[in-house]
Length: 306
Image 1 (cartoon, rainbow, N blue to C red):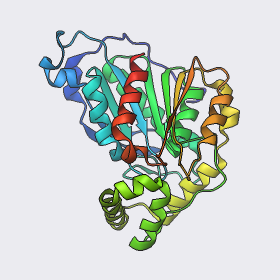
Image 2: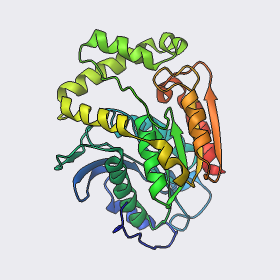
Image 3: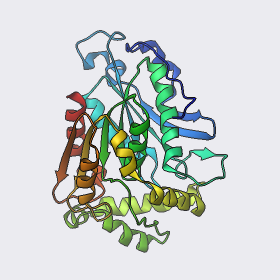
Image 4: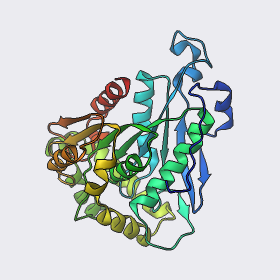
């Protein structure tokens, strides 16, 4: 993702023998980061009965998933399973952004969306080379959607772009409290009123999980501040005309963190994208991975199939 980046020109046929050479979780070392990733190989090659075609000779596609503020890539585990059930020739890869999860860096200058996008690009490059493909698709949620925009604007290899609960930028970012009661009160703003009532047990489990992660995590308050400042500095309106990938925008109509008008502005700014479609989820807020998991997976699969 800079002037010295070289794209490896390789065939688009998937080599099943390479599956065993890639750990399903681990780290990728780039020039300045130790990037934690999780990946799932194509379901068709885990179970040859999943499809009526021979193993090792079919094309595969790569979907890179990028999460939001202070959230790890492991949040996508169930979504990846749902996608691969419908699209058995897809492989999914998620990563931890700098300042969240297990990804670390030796650099001391301010964190930017560009740097996180560069980590995503390095991750995609590794898997494209391993899988012998030359393009990939990107899904970004919230802050991850901003990273995905940066990636798509600078990498022609991005074929399809999925932007969930995101926008061209924001003027406010709220940190997660460490007190359980305050954290729960804060998290309720991420759900619609109906979803918060329907998902009471899941919200309680999320609070418990986040408190546990805060205690166990090696990330610091400064790491959160770094992501916070990176989001505030993002200017998607400048990048949008450089995005040419077909784009799907998904928004919850009751999203109080990134209100749905942000999706309208994003759609209007993508003037050069091959296509742009917007999906509105009534009675849903910002946490679509929890609020509408089946519908989200369904719409993503339809878009990727098209």
